Length: 245
Image 1 (cartoon, helix red, strand yellow):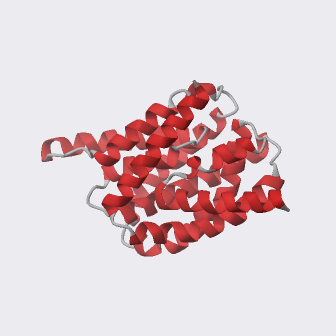
Image 2 (tube, rainbow, N blue to C red):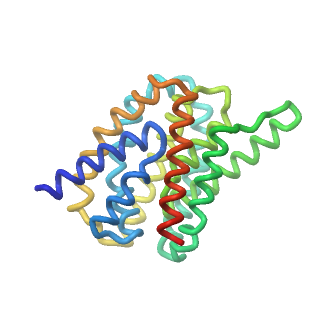
């Protein structure tokens, strides 16, 4: 019962940090590995558990998504293809390759949060193309390993759609993350034995956290949220650097 309750609490905290700021990895991965799972199985468990927060957060985020269907049509096909490729790569390429790069990705995301690219009319088109390429590469990583991917995709979307609010870009991030998790779940189910004793309590917690996260992102000023996310990214970078180096 204690094990069950601990995982529910972890799921709630991870669901809030995931759907409010893309910081689930700051909570879920350390907790799951501390409770005995390998990095890959922690990734699988996190993917299965967090699908509930994807649904609950999207339900709460409908006001932010209203009128943004063109953006969803632009980003979801990219994340779909990237997630499929990344999910298959998880079982083909050693995760250590990505693990050693993730801390530096986190620092880049923190920098992008605090120092967004200033666009001129001349560079806007080039920057947009680069952002879509970045979104595709992040989607591959998101389907492959996932640690810190929420921060990366949020930073990419903030750079891609600077005219949209933080809460709106966060809602787009939740939609893209939900699609990625759904694809990864289907592929993982054919590849590994799912640790349901971890997944079920995590899923319950994630559902609750997914309801709360978008509300928090909606209420807190964008600048403060960006600073919180950037700080979280730096902390996660340090944690992952110590772990993998």
